[in-house]
Image (cartoon, rainbow, N blue to C red; front, side):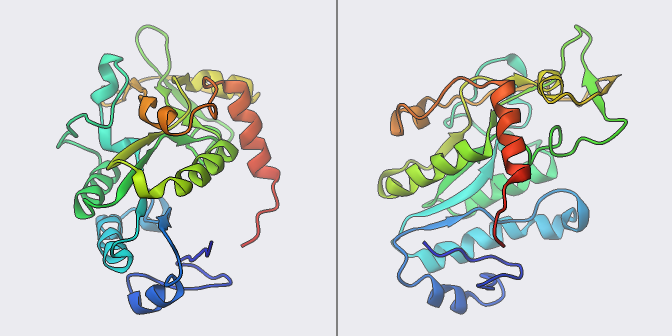
Length: 247
């Protein structure tokens, strides 16, 4: 497996700026897995940057040809569909009124209809709760006293899932929800991590729950999963923080 990024590293290759270089590097690859793209926040918050998701999907589709292409999408494509508390399936009709990041990922999926879009839930340690915590952190609280619930996956578990899916890349559907079964309350995550937080009234725009139905994923890789757990997610987030990951 060859890892290629858009930043400094052993192999520097920009599929958008120099697709021919990426095509050369990946010429012997059986599949292409793309986990890159513009993320909200920081210097990548502009709409023009977010549009790179679709541009990247088109470029990689051209390079992949007949080879399987797996693209990292996001649970953000579902928007507020989870407000009713019903687990979200891959066959749900995606809404039009999405936040910019969700809209960008939806456009990416549309731009690469032959690819498999991996609709990934929150990743423990790379999320806005555990990964984004800092002194004075405030958490939305709804009128019934609950905090937002989200589908989550630990970084180590995610690595196992991606490896397993790469082995089955030639027979994957158009979209797959990627998460551990169930959803977890954000307050439970912070409590499990021992991180203090203040409570604030949730705004009208706050999304109460995003619960991904992972039946399709469990059928593909049975036996890998356990129900989502705040304690185990925190443990994986701490592992990620302490891991010596080469760049």
